[in-house]
Length: 102
Image 1 (tube, rainbow, N blue to C red):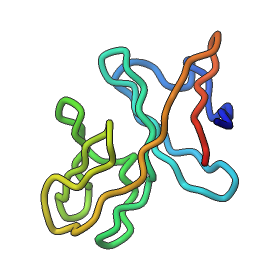
Image 2: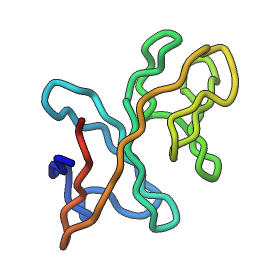
Image 3: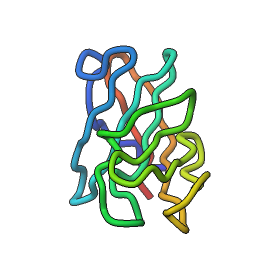
C-alpha cells in the first residue's frame, strides 16, 4: 500500500466534498457522518465532476444527469452511467487525509 496525503481534515469538514488532483488523477473526497470516502471525480457517463454531486447516505448523485454511485465501492447504482468509478481506501493520520493510490 502506498498511502498519500491528499488533504487535511480541516479542508474537509463534516458534510463537505472536495476535488483534488493527485499524480494527475482527479479525485473526489467526501466527509459524511465522520467517515471519509475517496472516489474518482469523473462520471463515466459524460465526465461530470462527482465532487459537485449531492449525497444521500453513502451515495453520490451525478450533478449533470443523475447517475448514482456507492461511495464505499465506486459501483454504479443507477443509469445513465453504465460503469462504476474507482474507490480508494482512506486513512486519517493525525489531521492528514491519506488515500491508498495503486
